[in-house]
Length: 202
Image (cartoon, rainbow, N blue to C red; front, side, top):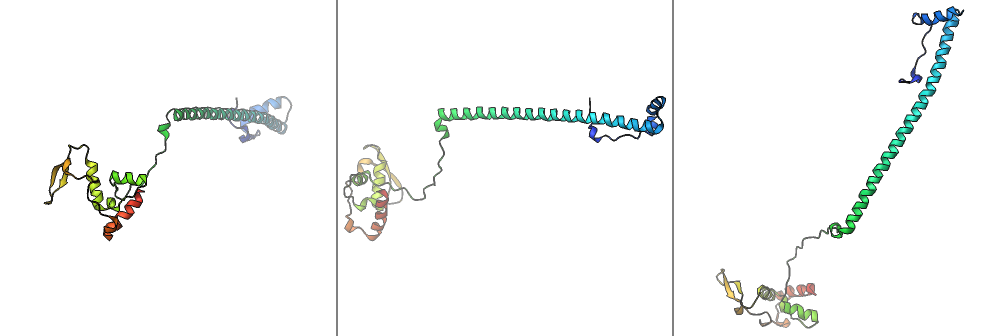
């Protein structure tokens, strides 16, 4: 079996002492020194050419085997990929909520405006609604109203001295019964506060 590339082999010099025994066999057959050396060279060339053909065939077979192996590996990788994709699609079908894209919204920078429910109901119904409910005073009244979970509840309100005190809910005015400032009596400051808030709530 060839282990070295015969294309890289160098033809020996058959006139040297190293090949004396080979030449002697040809001398015994009646060859002279020159004929013996040329005959040995020709024989080596024929053998080397045959080795080159065998080597080329061996390389073609090796390359073909490597190509088939690579194709099989690629088919195996593709099969695994297809199985993983099928499993992913099946999981996506079973767990749709798991793959819902996450929407990253901006954190609101504007303060939240929560007017009285009474005012919102009037606007929703298309009734006239006073701007008072969207002034600072109206929003404060609405805030107190929203804190009332039940009539007997207590509400903590700031006192005149800056401290907070608990006040019975019954003592807190309902925004509906609180005095309403008519639109024509609003100050320009209150109007400029309320108008944009009402528009934003529409």
